[in-house]
Image (cartoon, rainbow, N blue to C red; front, side, top):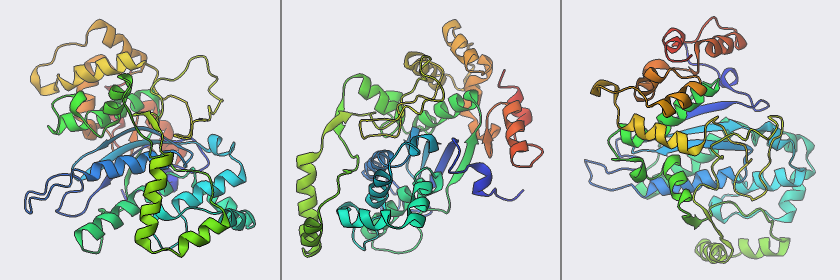
Length: 382
């Protein structure tokens, strides 16, 4: 079976939840210690986390969970065309220009001017194309991967591919599949023996949520969505590149605000009081919406993660405690299968994640008879 077309897996005009994996191609690690050269690239994880945070402030895409490991990253994204429909043309233009300025200088130095925005607004065809892309998961991943590759290549003094190829995508088709995938992503450093516990799993969504519950704040990496004047734009371009960097850093120090560490992530729990049709557009400038994604609360989710982290399927596990068993059942996962499902996630799922019936329905959607893993999934989801 050949690799699927992207438009089979998700479309920019529908709400879709997708698990994306982007892998580094080189022997030298993306963000770990290279055993051959001895160089430590761990600091690059913060580059990627801040890029996630910046893109969350402009794209109409929710970031549900993420984990950044030594040579690859995981992220669960939810496209939000309903949120995008609430944005004005001016908002669409400045958000796009903030990520893709169209100028041959470093992205972080290119500040959209009022003239740039008027130029986009005058071209209705371009504006429609831009609006479409702001809820497209492929364009989000492009905006994430491309700058990281260029910075790493420049730092490594080399050229060529930095990423293995196009990102791997798995469509998540129901609530049970989303819970299993979110737990798999959050537990990746523990599963890979890179961290002893959730509290030490830095650069994961669960770590950010744990720190935020303690009130920990960080400088926001969200994009500034206020355009500069034509005069400021001309003065900026006349300065040497190094001076532009210094000016930009000085401006950032003045305008950067402190936010909770998880403020750019989607809230964990779905609100029972809010109608499902309400896009819940976020007004704080750090993420697309205030809509959650799991039908359990943070306390139950954290307990499930802790239990699964300490109960590998091959280690003679015990049954889930009653309270946790109820949480698992309420999300549609057979309690006895939860640990195996998370620890051996790749054994169960390939292109699609969810229960057997949901996977079958998604296969019909794209004109296929079945998805690989349907039979195995039937034993895990009730």
